[in-house]
Image (cartoon, rainbow, N blue to C red; front, side):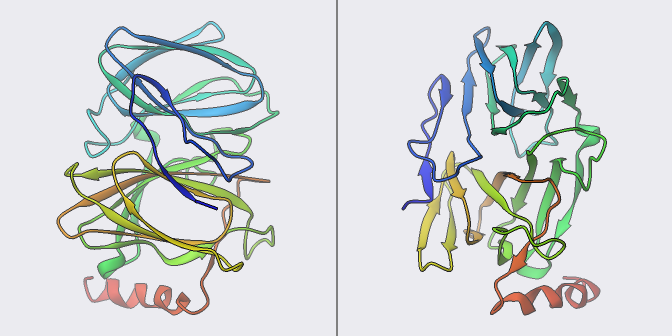
Length: 272
């Protein structure tokens, strides 16, 4: 089974050619100035994350004007729009716009809403050469006031030469507070655009794969351990989104590499 794909980036919605996940799905929406996309979500919630540009949303008659602002993912915090299950909606581009559309099953009655950049929480995970910067967009920990049925969404920026989501971890069974079951996907961008990274995936069943991270690549993780590294000279970005039985996050590190986590406090004290 393959756990990665390179998406097309054509006008309209671009979707993965296959999907090993049962809950999560993804679409990359690209619209030229003035173009409109219309759809409905009978049984799925969507978080529309503005990757770059600006758009006007109309969701079941409720209008959100000119949402967005950053020109690309490397230029600030995102604007996002929560689209609930059962909604009919349209998205009209105010200029050229690129929007990520992660989705998951939902039976919750939630009204649509906008997540402004001021509501996005930022910080640093890791230290030294496995330091990376995060932006939490829709998480129970950072945004408990924002409702969702399953979706958990954020962004990570991995500096030149650094490792990310390291040590490799898994989240494939509900055993709280130790571990929570969540599928996950990563949608990647690279800066400068001709750069690359490497993604390493493996699971307890013996599956293992490495693939080259490029602009618009997608990593799909129904289970297993995963980690990413940026090539020197390049920054990798990934939009991460999860869905499971609940929205509490808990992960388990690979036991052979988990000791690395215990060095973070010491490395930070040393200025790394």
